[in-house]
Length: 65
Image 1 (cartoon, rainbow, N blue to C red):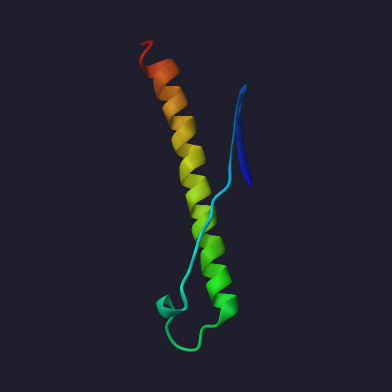
Image 2: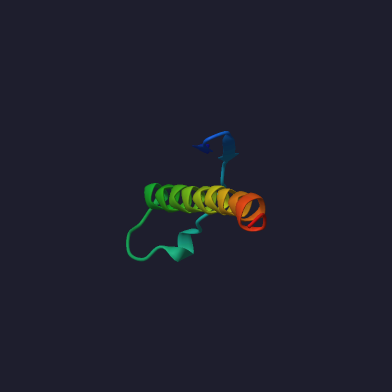
């Protein structure tokens, strides 16, 4: 789980990533599948968190101007 805190704004997110064996090239095994799935989950969490923070600031600060 990731969290971002900017002033009074606090957002938390977790992600789920998957990987299939057929996506891997060469001799990649279970370790590579798990590593790729974890990377995808982290990327998803980061996108959700920063998207949420950006939306908050657009809604509360840019629209007010």
